[in-house]
Length: 182
Image (cartoon, rainbow, N blue to C red; front, side):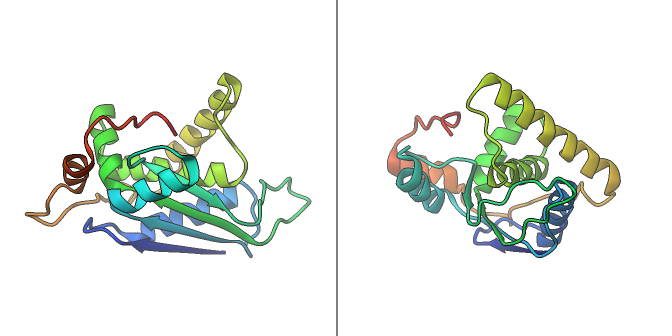
């Protein structure tokens, strides 16, 4: 199983934690060890462009998932192999959401990683029942990962003096982004 992590931001993010999380979640969901996943961290402008291009929604969002081979969770008998897809996460939006939720940016990005993987596996949250199922599963996976990992509390940080890219985006494009319209 391959989980590639790319960070195109100034955030200091430990790629191993996200790679380990991806491998662990895929294992829990019984996805083949021959499957590939990419996790990419980007600034507000690139994710806003993706958000507009693929969802026709303005502004940066927290996470977007791009499935490739439409793999689904395994049933223990059938092995699904292939490229699971790509997850794109904006740490700036994650930091804003984390502050509102009262937890760390790292915890939010780990949650968003699981959320993105579940989307790649066909889960969605359009209906209340789907939302209950998906959010319950992502919470269970996240809490179990935290319980098993002593280093899961590693923090994502910004170098001192780094300008706030989300504030710069808002200044250039106008505020009023709707973060709940995913």
